[in-house]
Image (cartoon, rainbow, N blue to C red; front, side, top):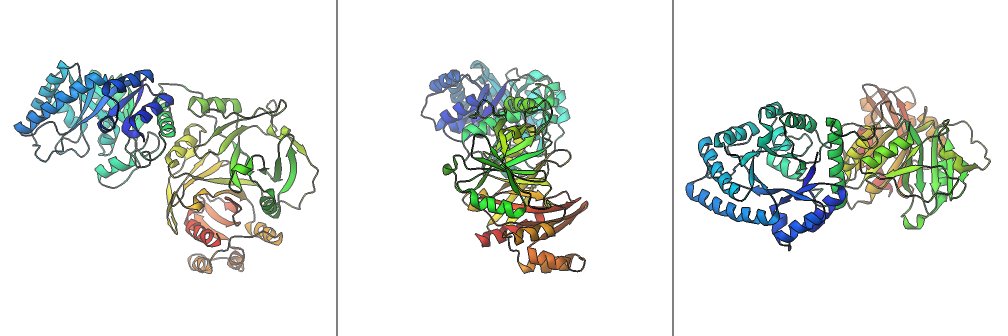
Length: 593
């Protein structure tokens, strides 16, 4: 189906919004009136600009407070409408959005509303324009799509139809099945938005918290199914009011928006992009640093051994059990300290995973590759982390390990780390919802519920994405404030069967564990019973503890190197990430800075 986006969904000038929509692959746009009023371009110039960009002007919006008002007010409305219809003819738009009235003088009179809308449609028809009447969820008297449709039926005019908006319908809890009773040709337009499930004033909810389909809690796909069964054949159009999107770059936001519609269409069976190939494990985590010594010291103290070096690049492979960490000093002068720059994901079919990524607007990153380097494809996550699709020592598939030459090494004793339990990626504040949709749709991971975590300087949000068996776990977080340096910290959680032994080994080798306040362990003693000496060991090593319905969780942290720290995790059936302990960890990290 054709896709469209309202200019109000993007930031910047109207020209910037149109350019972003075109580059993201949209077919058309809804021109929001305020964007046109603020533009130095004439309607004719905007029309030409859209044509040059391959965009149609699918809707002009909104016209407000038209119907069921006193006669003198309605006369002024018709005068205003004539001016807007003349403007729309210059703009090349043939459909106008009319919202149900919130005017304080509007009366609860369906017959009068139908009469006024019929007169408006008569005038619109003279200009070759259709009127799409929409029930606002907070409309003064008309606030459901079924009520709006009754008025449209009573008006009985060929130039009058309805605009259905998923937010207005689903935010009120209306049953969208009734949409199937509306003739498809009378559904003039469909606007889509998702939203988190919140208990708040619906107007504030609408104006500040809408998001793209698949990023919230509404069943947008279910609603669209009813609309399609009714016979609607117009565009799928996004109208999203969101404080974050208004401040983010229009280009990435437009790509995120278009991706949401591609995923929606896939869910509906309208398109068939390459099927998702969910990763089956973590092949490696790659750290980039200008000075390898500090992070190498931490890895050594954790029990890792430097086992190999890339044949053509300054990249070392450190390994312990199934956990692999690459330390890369190439081009590090551009980076501020050590950072988690890339993740290798074991893929059942790396080539197919790359094809799906490209189909969902995540193009494979260009890479400089020697002739004998393994053909390793990578895409960029919204936070800039490179995600590689890997096959490690699997028959008939190229392995990335072939690019590394063994350097001859001695084992550091029995391994205390089995593998990588999870990775925590702190997102730029304006990419959190985008990151969730990206990891779900492009990588085929399942998104868990979002949780709020108290930070000494605000709230952090966190949401984990995982594969089916938990062998890939990525925790996506947003820091307390855009200017807080701690929002850039990423971390690698290492799985161990005995966190006490692993922590002691690390400390004996000269590693520094994050100190945890004694008050925390005093509280543990009040909440849980422990074996003799157990809690004392936790106090000594700064180990935190939690339980859920499935088991227990013991974990501790190293101090931060650059923008990275490590976590030692003993997970005994536990399914979470220690969220109740996060405020203590964050406070301790602030003190340690």
